[in-house]
Length: 282
Image 1 (cartoon, rainbow, N blue to C red):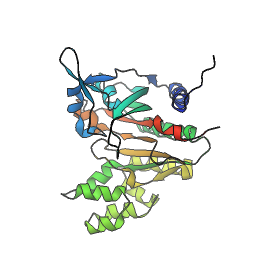
Image 2: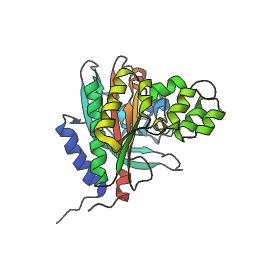
Image 3: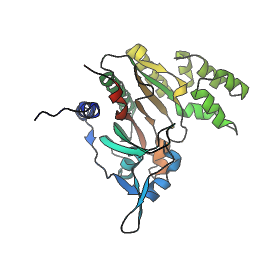
Image 4: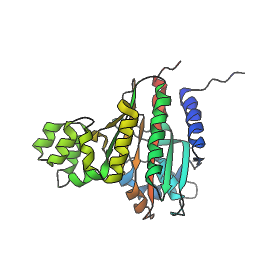
């Protein structure tokens, strides 16, 4: 009997092959964890809602809302470089939705004593991932630096300023008396002159990918929509025909420190496979 793969299964298998060939190992995890594990990390979750149930032994359990946290929990040696890929489902309330959804994800995490080449590899894999999903359509990876934005977003209006930045609302930023440097970063799409604002390593990365991938890579500060989860480079991937980002990722050293892994570095991304069924491929 012939078996026909769903779009999610097809891309999950295709991407797993790419990641494994780059030295990433498959990471398997339980579908649920004790609720206290996620309750202590709610500031880092994309959705603050966690689906819970009572275990027969009385423990309050939760269906997994995030994969990265589960992987971090299993990191013991911060001096070793850990490279994982995964193919899992998460359970969360997406932005703008009013109910929990089961979302199939695949992605990679690179954790440990990261160097510039490791971060460059992850970004290159994100671009390759988008190329595979796009199947000949246009795609773009938008990137910025969450740490730089955090240094310019402060005061009691910080939340409003960040919302205006994400919406590319320059008028709103001026009304809120946002830092002029932040306004300049928001005003000009793919503003390569803004690269001088970055630290040396990030500037090098941005220049390399801007020159190497052209229109498939852009500097765009509206990408920074969460200052809790990411602290360094942050990026989102878009494919023509999809209404939202199909890929999102970045550096999350602050998350590692908050989970007891101070001095450890992490970068990775996740692909929302539930979106790819909206694309028709030959």
